[in-house]
Length: 565
Image 1 (cartoon, rainbow, N blue to C red):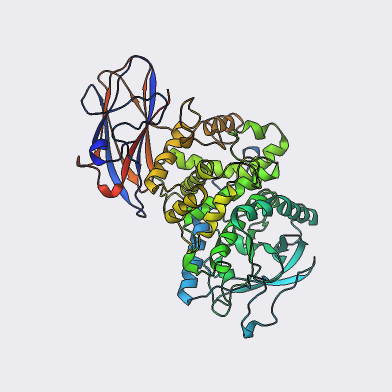
Image 2 (cartoon, rainbow, N blue to C red):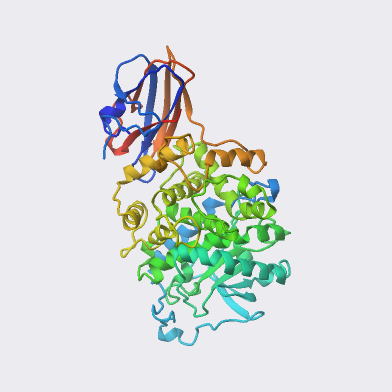
């Protein structure tokens, strides 16, 4: 690992008498949102520079080391959501709450009862019964924004009352999902989704006193997808529902997950089939439930404010982890078993679980790893599917690397839920983003790495995962064998096929001279593969700004070299 400016400006990979392969990763640990550094990468044979030592398969630590479309409908897998619009809604809600100066609604920690203002006395809701009518207010305003002052009352019908959820149906979509559909969903939410989400991310606060979260299938979600959109909004959670209704009258002062409803004829948005809604519902609830739990650990139970919400990239990453671990729990699996798709594709139950909980995650990872230096990792701008893939992949590696091992967690093979609970709360002061990650690592492991150190190991992992014996475990994934997973997904026709990380190739041969110019965004990496089929000369690598000057200190650039053959 090379971390100081002189070292990364010119270094040498030693020649040798045999076939070898090195992964060379150029990374930025910059923390500036939308930061960008133009880079010039040059490699040539038989030149003189600082020599990177050859330590076989070990991480190099030589003298310079430091302490509805797009769609995937194969096998019936569902369309990916409109991620940009989903995140835009979250930001709209927070902007609106800040605009009106909204205060969070509060509960009593001891009883969970509502701490109501006198003007709201008597409005607390009892546990409803099936077929009861409950009035829910939608904050969706004309044009698709979220407003504290413009609201639509909907008299929803209770379809199920489970241990953890009340499923409510919008009358506009009545009869399209059957009573059995709702009952089956409610049973799975109680048995598989709620327990693992609670263990990983905390418990809800119960603002409305009914002891449950409302899962509301409503066409108010459908109308949020703009005409001609390249995706489809399938659900959301909004902080508006956690606000004091004195400040934000369109909120419900209740735990609500808003879910897309069937609309086969496209009456209020794109056509949405009943089969599609049934297929996505389990994973969608797991995803949005994490957002609700995360917000309530900070704002409601944590006595924070709406300024204490988690950064979008990390919040979305945790929701994709919620999907993953709910899928594991559904069929009795756990992390750290180095799985591919074959373990799921061997049975119909496994295929169904992979489709419900995992495939969208790996479609997002495919987008991210196809252009890892171009993903806006720390912002919601740009290629949002890639940002989601970054957040999920980073957190999966983080759980593998720093999650406590041993038994006792809700899933077999790890106590990593301890790590994710720390991330969910953000600690006593509700940290978010990078400081939250570093604090959680310290709490559960006792280690105190810098963000630069964490990224150095993480960025090595996609390039060296399951690359052979001797590659350090900290630069691999232990839950998934990613190269094998994607090969098997391609063979099964689930995704396009092949591992999406495709490093720029450099042949280690006499007369080699290669230049690659690229932009390196904050906290991203660019990958190169140096390879030789036999005896080869040493290679000099020069890394500069595009102007030829040293890479600016603000980029916090590092180079990691891993020998994989």
